[in-house]
Length: 100
Image (cartoon, rainbow, N blue to C red; front, top):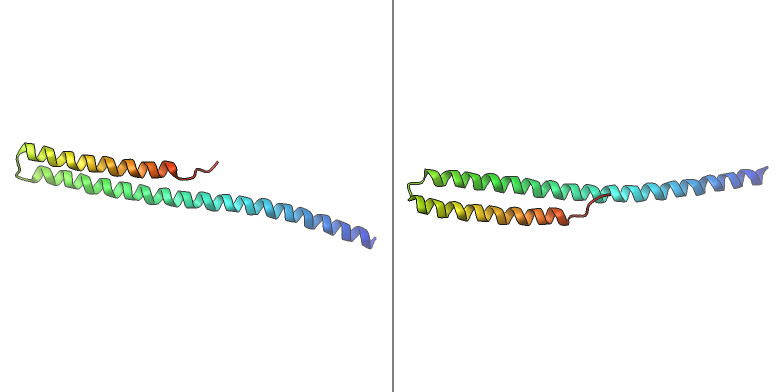
């Protein structure tokens, strides 16, 4: 009788160990996914802030008393800068590990 109880407890411990490993692996995956989401959030925030900043600069260009040719050049510089920043951030977001 005593031996059967010990065997049953050993089986229960084995099952608990298996469950613990499964939960550990799942927790590890969720931590990695969480880090990826935090990084995406950070990059998205930077993207939005940069975009707003450059849109404000575009708006300021229209208020300047410069010639239309000068305004056009200034706009193009800002737009090209915005494109470069966005492309770099998008590349970083795409390169982040994706969860299954």
